[in-house]
Length: 324
Image (cartoon, rainbow, N blue to C red; front, side):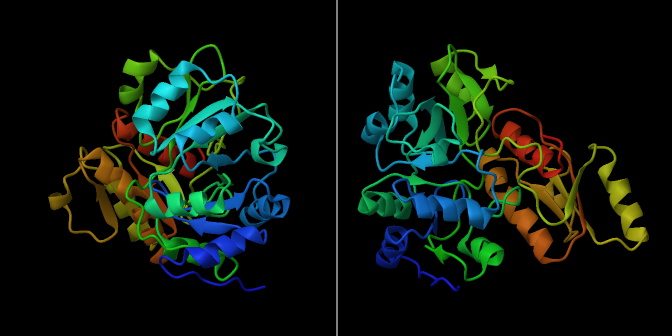
């Protein structure tokens, strides 16, 4: 059945879709989310169905304001309030012990829940007007490339989905996920809030391990375009690109600024990520979507230096290549 497309700021139709148990794609400052009311079993089921997402994979709760945290979590440590004051609204997801208000469908049956307050004005209005938290993964098919524009969402779902168009996402990659449910903070997914920013507040962050909660984006193969992504060394990508072209392959390359300056190449199938980390994050998925749109079969990706936002970009590229 066709779902209505929603023009730029038509909140009323989006709210009507949510009320009748239909998910809505909505913009955040990171990527577009595919949200349903947490009090709508039908809506939550539709999210999993549309994405093709396993039911054991938890969803992130999107709240209207930090004060709503107490309704959805319990045993909230002081550090959570400190981080919420510093980074919310914004691209930081906190994993906490869930309250009874959070259904099993959201958490994958786990005792924890990931929560954040998005910074995009349309997302804030949608959640506030709905009057209830929205559970939302990214608005793409499971394991595929996250959308940073309404056009990306429509390319993935066609008319199956209501799409609230808020323009391009200014962040470009997903939120940082920080686990505060254990004895010490653990970084479960690098994102737009960096380790370097968090550690002065949190102390040294532990890495995800076998005992960590399951969270969005933790599958070894994730964030993948249709083209096959292959990791290449800084000194080898150009030779591999030329050899593949000589064989007639439709191939592209994605390389960081420290490997080759943007001014050093005029090749349309070579995208150089900017030196500025925030700009590089914004460019990452846009470049991968563009390669798909041009029909590329393979993408050679060189990992950036893993500091600050480079760590999050490298994480996404590893998972796109099935090396997460």
